[in-house]
Length: 239
Picture (spheres, rainbow, N blue to C red):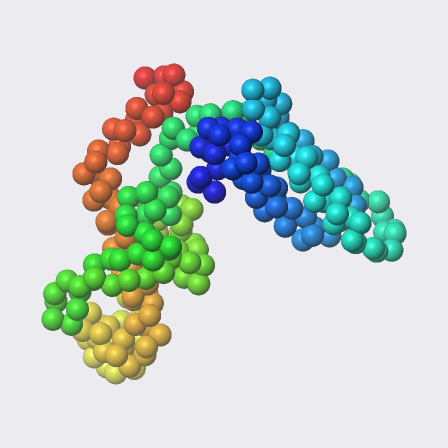
């Protein structure tokens, strides 16, 4: 909810703020029914006299959970469960995080590249060696994205590269054993032609290596490393 911060703290007590508080409480409340035990619960929130947004969200959430409890009719459990604790903190509890850039792979992709509704364009080579633009969706159906989206971009690059080289070496060996040819990239192309699954995997690696390369290019062009050092100094008070 990127729009939540300016609405909750820039338009407090407005209908838009009330709507956003209800939206946040609703999203939090959808987690409750997934818990096996939630007959007892505690909601903890931070006090903010100038803008009690956490308290407002907590109250709305409590009302929704109370409704869940009224609808849920189960036999008494043999063991009394410990109460579920829900902690709600507003941004005044941690005002520094928005000042810092996040260097995770996913964060940089969305910050530095053109991504619209999880659709991204990236450059790749066609059969003639020319550069073309392809489109791909960034979602949890992509296992490479799932594995590395929360890794630091340098770590993601290193591990995806290692995976890709291991994949190439493994399949070069397969091709060599099956066809008796030389284990080179030409053989790899033959494998891709014969086994569409390999082409899909190669396309995935190409996608992510291209995205990381694009992120690092923009990262250097706008001197984000220097910006990050300034952000850390502002956040920590240490130059």
